[in-house]
Image (cartoon, rainbow, N blue to C red; front, top):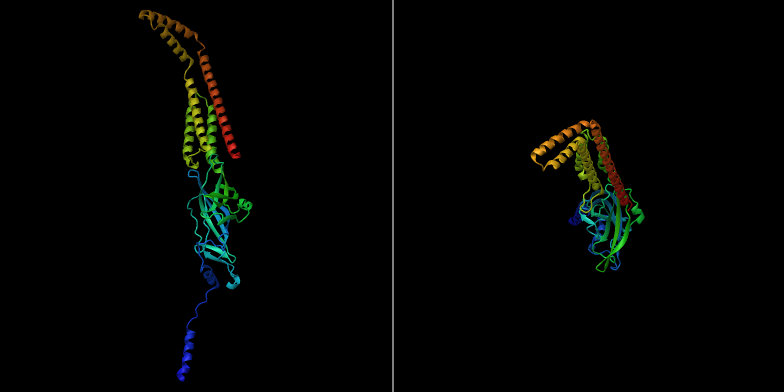
Length: 414
């Protein structure tokens, strides 16, 4: 009887020494319950004929790069997807009042919404979780760095505006299976620039959007297109490209006031042309390159160099005229006449005739006591030619500037 009395006491001691099995938390129980029989490959609807509506929201964070040569734009966006999963529903009262949990995005169904203009993988952070509330609403929030194709118009660089599109669509499901809609009103999305980093090269104007369907192989696919309208801030390029070029052209125009017979005008204009060429080569990387269309600023630099070369050629022509005096022209003319007149006569007769002509020519030259005035008249004539060429140069430059301003104005108003 003593042994029988001792056995229950020993079992009680052993029961007290064994730790209790920890009770699963309400969050753990809820997660296991939701994912126990969940199939992430099946669209989450009870009635398969009912489409799943994916609500999309977009906020432009910054424009990181605009590559005119490859026609690519890199933007940083905050992207939100919201949809309803009919298989992820629970009663919060049964799970300690839990109304929202985070689940792995690999464990549940996620829509196959892509960006049609996507061309390269950006440096986007991986967000492995989504939020799910008790009514089945799934929220997938993530930042994305999008490298997208864009038809860039750089003709009016650096005063250009760009319109790049981001088109969201389901890659596989038709509109009868997956439909798209905007989470916020289109007007609110278009004017939402509060998060944009507005201290860079590009300024965000607006982000209009519209919904439309694309028909492929007799199936309609829902699409939402966002038009990212951006404008370049031209101040940097005006200071580094346009203003130095304008200074060179102004100095070249004023160099016409140097005396053409001083010998310094040619050297000065050559130095201007050389300096403009050096600046143009050093700033080649600042101008966007494209194989389709040349920017208007490229034409501006080419015409400026052509005008500098034309100015130098005009000055060379005037200096060349100044080296031909009136006396040299008369001597060349009289020598030519003598050779033409007496070139076919006998040698003795030619010598006597030439002697007579030389004597008469000497008398003629002695009578020219106003030779200095003739020389000054020739210089004055050369100066008039120089003034005429200067007026022609100014007229060409004026026509060029007016044409350039007209082309820029027409493009900006288009």
